[in-house]
Image (cartoon, rainbow, N blue to C red; front, side):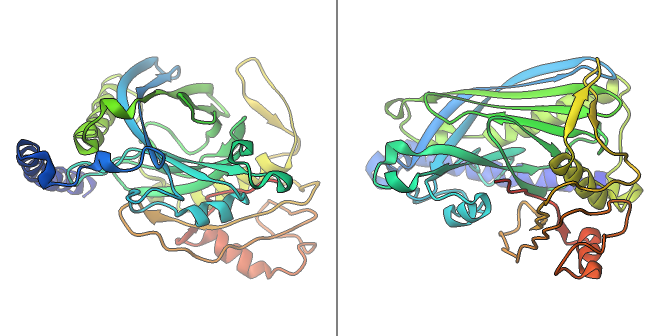
Length: 367
């Protein structure tokens, strides 16, 4: 059924993109003053970047590749035509607990097709005594939107741009299980930007790395944003499927979506994330397997933590904001039972949310 759905989706997108590409070509042949070009957007509200994405898998087989990409960086407070199906600036500020500007790095839709494995929100903070000076804004938090292909599921979570560890909560690749944690870093976008993700696995160690590096493209060199990003999402999709085929050819095990094999995978990811947040990391072995205080079967958090829920959704659906659930606890028993010390929170509600099909641990906001 998944194969049939995939083929039908590919055919539908091909026909739609072919039609819209012909219309785009027709538009470019007409006099410029007949149409309002996307380049008329203020250069202060959107910046263009061009660079490469590099992937390296070290275990169980070695496989690496890189491909060229183009991204747009939107100032969500001023961009008149930011892509749909993303957070608004105020929503991002509320999630990240910041008060400054919000920038969104993403691949815009092209001729009716969207493909965004990763979008990043850069959330800046302004000190109270320097509110009037925009130059005093500092990058405080990043928000990652991760979307899997071809399922179109998305999770959103906060991470510290200097370095942060996040439990994998989405079936991103059918050639990776759900046991890995994402180690993420990003810099404040300027003339250059980068985002790095490494996967740390309890058995395979630090076995996968992905890096995005890009440089700002002068706006004077781009006369039409639609042509600049023409077929960019399609190229990303082709690279994803092509290298998935290569991994299959190298006999890397194909892993079904955990919905079919482990319905509790979301709850397990939530538990792992709680452990990452609240149990100190005491070191790692020679293969970079992380070691935590406490056991996997049952442990107690030794300090207050926050559990925040965010709506899981398919990426093509409009964003629906839902109420967040915050649970403050002195300690929490993670062996399947909520401790009685969780004050002011109904334990049945906690377990219902953790096991719900409609909610997922998707972002964490650390002070």
